[in-house]
Amino acid sequence: MTKKVIAGCVGLLAVLAVCATPKEKPKPMSELIEEDFTLASQQYKLLMKNTPALVMPQTFDYKKNKVVTSNTKWWCSGFYPGSLLYIYEYTKDTAIKSEALRRLGILEKEKHYTGNHDLGFMMFCSFGNAYRLFGNPSYKTSIDTAAMSLITRYRPAIKSIQSWDSSSRFKCPVIIDNMMNLELLYWVSDHGGDAKYKEIAINHANTTMKNHYRPDYSSYHVVDYDLQTGNVLKRVTAQGAANESAWARGQGWGLYGFTMMYRFTKDKRYLDFANHIADFILTHPNMPEDGVPYWDFNAPNIPNALRDVSAASVIASGLLELGQYVSKKEQKKYVASAEKILRSLSSDKYRSKPGENGGFILAHSVGALPLKSEVDVPLTYADYYFLEALKRYKDWYL
Image 1 (cartoon, rainbow, N blue to C red):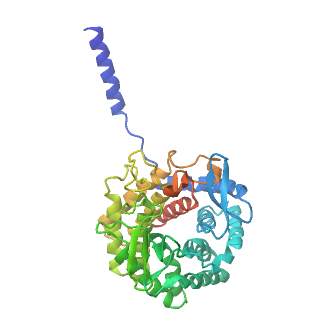
Image 2 (cartoon, helix red, strand yellow; image 1 turned 45 degrees about the horizontal axis):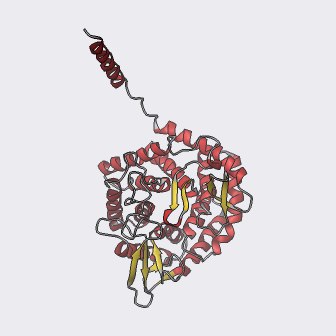
């Protein structure tokens, strides 16, 4: 036998040995969730130290190596206290609870804010969770007041809540994100408030189904309306790759929003719609293998486009709730998809190591790439919906 043949045989045996090595068994989800919440507690104690008392964390500036903060009117201001409350609920860490209550204190005044449509993000992710956990009547008062503030933006002519104020670019813009703020309104009606809140939520959801979606169940980002006629003026994007593209986080907002509307109404139209959106997301040819989408499903430089961890977190949380309302077969599919996302986000590729990223849990989110804003950075809402998805998995599927 020649040396070349011997070398070839040895090489083949080495390859076979590697192939025969059994794959490492994945960690049980219960163990992974415990690990994630333990890290989250450590990280948010660091984030607490890095965030001055009267502002909220927003993102992390890698060039300056510091946490970027916002005032409490910023649309993301409720996510930090909301995340703290999810962490406290799991860990019972009193330092985390104290920080959450302090931040609720500086946020409370925004219950009167009418500058945009984001009162649900701001006040329900924060005070909604606080009231659920602690039952403090003052928290419910804040939620009720926020609902009153939000409906000042309702426009009967289009049966929708106006998202942003009119400008040189838009007459009456409504964005897909607005589906998420309907939870605040419906919850208030269901907890002793006026029925008008849930009527507005239903009207808005129905208008969104009619005007925001394409035949393939992908969503436009922005629909602009004429308030005199109620007609659609244009369908465009502000944060996606193109007017006709499927901006990833927007698809997540819709999935989550229509699933949530089914939770409240039990109207099967919303459930069917959410199933169609889920199918669009999960079967899209541009969805990466690890379940963490590119920032836009039609981004021009796929497969080299940036991923959006915030979209992945929202999608995972939405899928887990959708799994509660469907057949066993569909549930298995949705839960498996959400689990894949959560395992990916819990890997070194996306999750911070202790002490990294100023205290945020996850990296690699994309806020608004066309505006060159918050590109490939940690974001508070990525952390929030990641923690919510972990909690949902633990509560519903373990």
